[in-house]
Length: 459
Ligand code: ARG
Image (cartoon, rainbow, N blue to C red; front, top):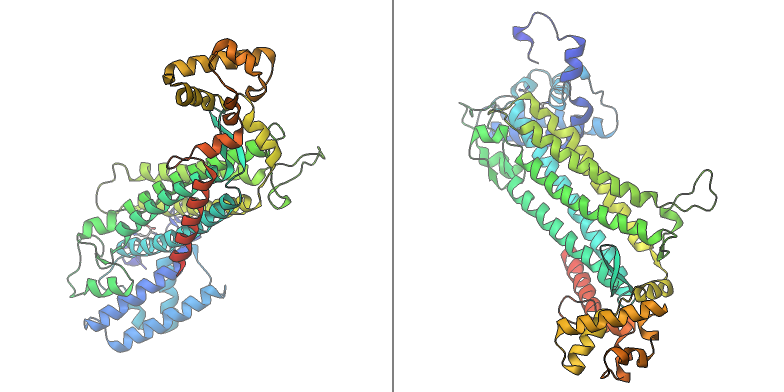
């Protein structure tokens, strides 16, 4: 394809390091669509004949069906997807194929293909994240009143509901979707027609090919068009944050399903056994989601480092953008699917969760709040009194709501019988009805609001 100036072909090692076909073959659909749009535009502008454009389009359609039927033979010697397609086109239609590469270069071609691929991938990820949000909100609605220990520093802090905990992830996923949507807005500009780096002397219509490929507009600067990979970096940043979110929930599933806490059970569908220990139920899927965040973040780091210090315009370094990004975004898609499945299948042990929620004097804040409300004691002082009551309960080894009133009165004589009404975990969560708080009625309202919103998005 570029042999005119060369006396011999590349050496074997050169071919091996140079070829990108093993991964950029995944761009075949985008590559063919972009070539068709380019050929149409060339014909409309009178740069090639309508007859040649027709032959080109027909040949490209044949190649598409050959690839999809698994009948296309990809050749390493042809380096990449662009030259594999063009070479096959020449076998199929002869001379007209040689006119397709007028007023373009592989530099704008690969930038166009990869943007289109990234756009399709972002759309698929968004749909997957919406599905995951739905799974979370449905589970949250079912468990709006299921009490569990709320933790800070992994220490029992205050009772919360399982539904509230799940809805926290719905909010995180909403921000993730926002970041992908934002990246998508900026990536949706067409590099096609920037040619190698400087534009072209042919009277092309970049608006036309941009529109045909559903880009919002052509990129305004040809040097920027062929050398920019922000769209991949932004998508990988959004993916990195999303994968960090998933890894946190994955870790929580590991904790919740460990016999050490025994708060929940994961279905057989998402659990594996041990080859030596017959009793084991390992949360491998959750552990792998936790780990796959490493790949995603790694791909972002790798591409940042590839791009750092690269002079304009195209450099072959940029070929390293695809393999990691494809691997990372594939890993993220799989992680989302696995998490949606696990969340739907998680079975909380409500009795055990409730018991754990009350352990560690989890309603101490409720007692302090009661002292403030009923006895008009300043919160700082109420905090101190409560601390002494907790110490007393710990000394005698009982839970707060089991400590006799007389014992509490030794510390604060004005405490009355009605204090017990705030010491249960159910009362505790019910009382936290401030906006965004864990009260079951809040959780129910939030879950329903999200389910309605997600339903409306679909139509
Ligand atoms: N396979 C190349 C890539 O992925 C296509 C662009 C090649 N351009 C060039 N001037 N060698 O970046």
